[in-house]
Amino acid sequence: MSSASMPPQGFATARGRGYRPEQVDARLTALWRERDAAWDRAARLTVLARDMEAKAARLRQTVAGLAPQDYETLGASARRLFRLALEEERDIRERARRAAHECVARAEADGEKALRAARKAADALRAEADEHARRRLLAARAEADALRVGTRREVRKGRGEALEAVREVRRRTAGLLDGQSREHTGHWAGAEREEHERTADLETRYAERTSRAEADLAEAGRALAEAEASARRVDEEAHARAAAIVADARAREEGITRRTEQMLREHGEAWDAVRAHMDEARSDLTSLTGPAAAE
Image (cartoon, helix red, strand yellow):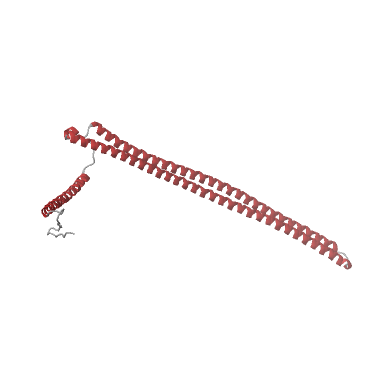
């Protein structure tokens, strides 16, 4: 196999089909020149890109400081379309605001009406329960007083009759003989025992009637307490119902507000598209015919 030499340029040369050194040198020189040119272009492009970024930043600041577009420089039709869009947006916003306020006002009025009706019903129920309990209480007290008076009268009457019978027995036995005294004494003791039994019976009847009267009083008190508890429940239910109505109204108001905001966003997006289209048309007109034709 033939040997090969290594020239200073770094390319191996050989006999037969090897490259010539002058060709290699020429190719390398051309590549170096292309590399240098590419570096120069890259440097210029870097500077140009920085200049463009700075110019874009200045343009963004300028655009941010511009006044809102009123399209006064366009034709009458464009200005009329712009004004109609603005009026429609304001009208939609105002109608939505009025609808939300009216909905809340109606809900609050309905809640207040329901609360007043519930309070009125609760007051009527409480008044009726109070009156019923008061009548029952008065009737029970009257019955207890009547029982107490009647019983005392019967007790006094029974005691009087018994004492009169005892006195009569004593009068009849006063002139009898001493031998008959024990018999009359026994008769007197029996009369006293009968009078005591009658008195005990009257007192038992009085106690029973008094107990019934007290039971009626307790029942009337329980009825009054139940009526008051029922009235409180009705009042609480009325408050809960009114609160639920107001909460529902608030939820409806929030829903209307959300739908209105969504509609306004969609309207704004549509109007932005229209304005973009008009800006593009204006730009095309300006580029084709000059500023005078765009006006």
